[in-house]
Length: 248
Ligand code: NAD
Image 1 (cartoon, rainbow, N blue to C red):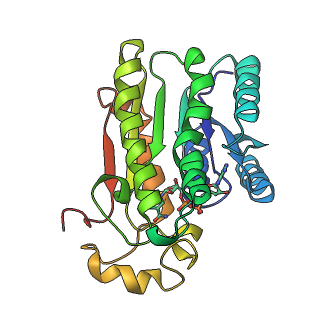
Image 2 (cartoon, helix red, strand yellow; image 1 turned 135 degrees about the vertical axis):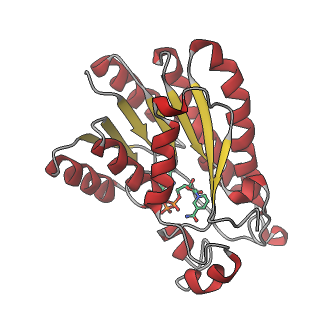
Image 3 (cartoon, helix red, strand yellow; image 1 turned 90 degrees about the vertical axis):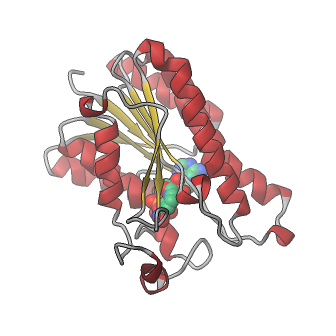
């Protein structure tokens, strides 16, 4: 494989879908993974129809054996993994007083440990120039929100993962960075069960200095930069992409 090989988790919809399209559009081979099989296949078919290079694999990031098998298969076939975008995530609204152990553990298992499961088997095959990008959230770096304590906690854990792993693999020339998106127009944000609901734009925009929600493509473009040689001296950082919300 002469193209860069990019693994994206949760790439069937939302930010992950835009990330897959972005990397494929610039000539990389994208390994699209998601629990959502129909959506993931549709992303892969659209990329291929547009002349890009992609393949879909069903992957639940809660399944260690499946992640090991998938990453091992990618290494066996291509001999390389250049970029991992650990994007898969859930954000169910639950007040702390009603929090169950199961819901807390599920959130950590997907949003934080799910990253370990994909990064760990890939690391031995990654070479200098390799790049890992993990999706945190403004709620993981400097922003609290009711009914999201478990989510904020897991996303803060992602910041720790980024900082620690960046130091551990720096001497091998592998960079690790995070993204802390603000309010981005995806199914997660537009779901009442998970976040603001269908009126998210009206609810959030007055608080956002730029006066609007972000688009998934505006996260994907920053991820594309972080994975590029233009960011060759940038590691261990979590970049906030929120239309000015936190400084505002
Ligand atoms: P989304 O709900 O649109 O997409 C999430 C994707 O993750 C889906 O494709 C889903 O199937 C996948 N996924 C969920 N559980 C999975 C599992 N166990 N295994 C594999 N895939 C799984 O959400 P999004 O807004 O695109 O979010 C992408 C990432 O960005 C998430 O980590 C999210 O927490 C983070 N984020 C989003 C926002 C926002 O405003 N949309 C803000 C901050 C952070």
